[in-house]
Length: 305
Image (cartoon, rainbow, N blue to C red; front, side):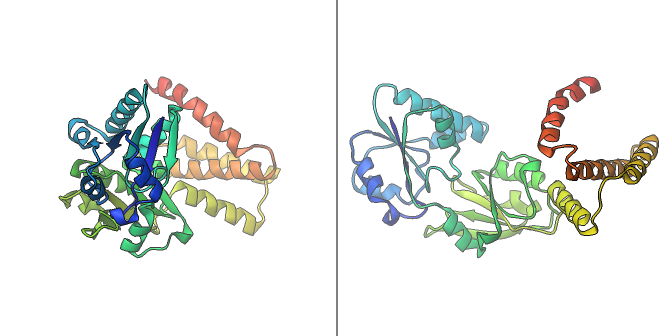
């Protein structure tokens, strides 16, 4: 069995009694990172441990680091119980723990104090309107500009640089972001910078994260929500007349397709409008539409080759 234990987000003063008990149970102790204030408790009490920090220098990506950590833990736990300590609490933004769960490993979760509260305090934000958690390997369409977003595992400058380029596809380059390092610790650093300046910060480490307040930028979810509100407010339904109007406009815009995006925008709006109207009439189900589109993506890729 693997005891997966949260070290809390701040100093050793916030270690739980259960965490301390497990540290001293005689099992082999592994730390995802020893860059944590709670490390002082191990050293002061002469508790042996092994850290995985060396993997961050050897591996090309955080995915590789996480997979290697899990591989080592599973091998070590084949014939004995071991302890695995992570910053914060195991089930908040800890990819290695998610991977252990996916592997259906025999684990015992021991919660700690999450890093979320110190981060919110550091940036002076309230998460009451929604907070989106993402890893640094997030994709463009994972983001939602309507919500504050917390991006974890930004542990070096290269990741910050890649992330900056990705964020500029979603937000304006001058939109502001907070870079928080060592949240809640005595050496906590909070910087507020434009998104395009994220690569200029030099001291990212294994306890760095980026917090982006919600903005006025638009995304597909906002567009669809807005369209639904308009149809509801204007009491617009699908009848033969509206169907023929939309059909005619779709055909006309399809004939005029060019390398600019004006016609594609009109076609997209009209297509979404038609689907929304059909959904209101019970003629289609958006869940089925999403599934059908997903199935057809491979066929589209083959067609374009």
